[in-house]
Length: 355
Ligand SMILES: *Cc1c(COP(=O)(O)O)cnc(C)c1O
Image 1 (cartoon, protein in one colour):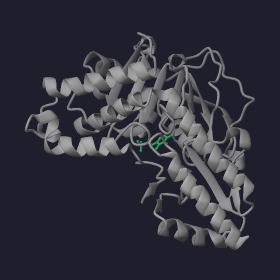
Image 2 (image 1 turned 60 degrees about the vertical axis):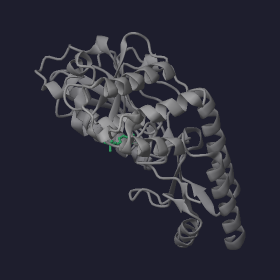
Image 3 (image 1 turned 45 degrees about the vertical axis):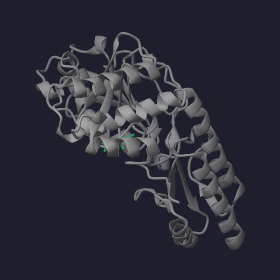
């Protein structure tokens, strides 16, 4: 039995793996592989339409919000966002709450001015700053909803009058939110949506077309909207896997019931960590992530022992990011509660032996 706590690419529902595997050999009983059909065929168009329809339905998007599937991962969005939204002489506001929060700032500086309204770098990104102001003349405000590496998460949507942009790569579709409050949402698919190689973008079309610089077609959101995410050959298989995962999410009853289980998983793990002195959660309690749980050990010498034990018990992907050390346990939508129970039990056993 494998328990997959990988941070990304990460666990997807079992049925998604099985259906995707079958489609590689024979897609919808056509005798053709999903890998060998034209992207402009009705066969693939129906996959893309279903994926977009499911995103709109699950996120309850209004008519102004368009859904795109693009190449290049979230990292491409770090520069595609300012390229489309930030004029040379304008200023965008950014919140810096982690490794993934700081990277887009550097990229935005290539296109205009950046105002870092707050940063939690002073304490190793272990909390979410609260007292900051977003100037009303900012081109937009950008933040990361969940800091995958450090294990913090914003539990409320910031109030702002300017267009709101969010990197939701590691907690998209994991909790109910008023997604229409965002003007642009992006997420690499490989954490909660599907396979690596595609990036989901939800954009309010009213904020586009205001930048003065000419844009290469592949970088222009409006061109992608006009062409229905088919400006060129899209990542066909990756989109197919997203569609299967979205179908699974709908079968579960949508985001709300999955969020309930996500909360149970996170509560169980944090309760276990808080009750065992051997383990030490690293972030501010109020800002704890329900997707990525980060902790170290009171005695660092025990870390290797616990890692070995996890390996022996089939617990995969618990080693912390190289920049933080310790452990990181990811609890994405597809991870069953039973995996967290197994890990919590292992922790209890370990603590009894090494207290
Ligand atoms: C994983 C991750 C990224 C990077 O995604 P790529 O698809 O590898 O470019 C960016 N932001 C966040 C919050 C992430 O978790």
